[in-house]
Structures are given as structure tokens and as C-alpha cells.
Length: 131
Image (cartoon, rainbow, N blue to C red; front, side):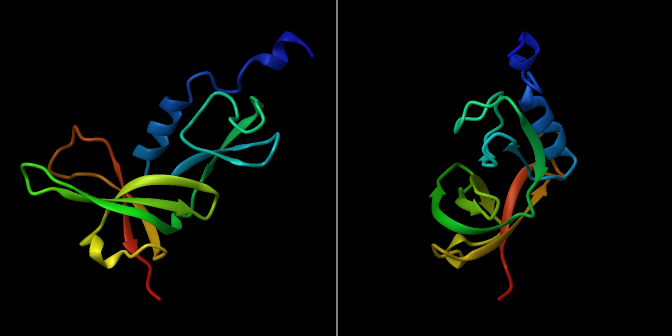
């Protein structure tokens, strides 16, 4: 093994993640060493320690793992934990009333921007998938 083999493919993956998210992707990394999904973005695989991580885009299809309501001054909002088909879990907003998202419900995610507040980061939003 040479010193070059120990240099991460991407030393600052969070910047690439944010750029891809701003472009409307649902990005994640896949490890070339063990073929497992890696999320959130990292420099090395938490499963096998490989530094050979490459970016992929999720189709956004998944299953509701959990949900909750976060109270706030503006009334609050629903939060979902979704297991995506590619093998990782994300936290996201519900597109409408989370009561319509029972555990195990099939959902489809998309990246939404807040048109009223351009300073806000793009957020992941899930909707019920048509049955």
C-alpha cells in the first residue's frame, strides 16, 4: 500500500452533498469496498473503512420508519424518518398532514426550495406514493 492509497477520494464530502442537493438531487455515497450505502456523507466508509466512496442519486422511493410533530411558534411541522430503497435512512418533512403517513407507508421524496426565503437550504419533502 502506498501513501496515495490512503488519500480520500473527496476530503470534504459535505460541500459536494450540499451542491448536489441544491441541484435537486437526493445524493448519497456508495462504498466500492463493501457496496453499502453511506449517509450522511463521510470521508471513509463506516462499515468497512474504505476511502473509495462514490456519489449516487437516490430515486427517492422509501418507507416511513417513524414520524413526529415538532411544535413551534408558527404552529409546528411534521417530521418523517424514511428508509430509502438504496439502503439508508433520512429525516425529512411531510408534504402534508403526517397523519396520512402511517408507519410502513410508501413515499416518494423530492428536494424542495422555499421560494419565499432564498437564504434557506433546499429541504427533502416526502409525499404519499399513489397505490
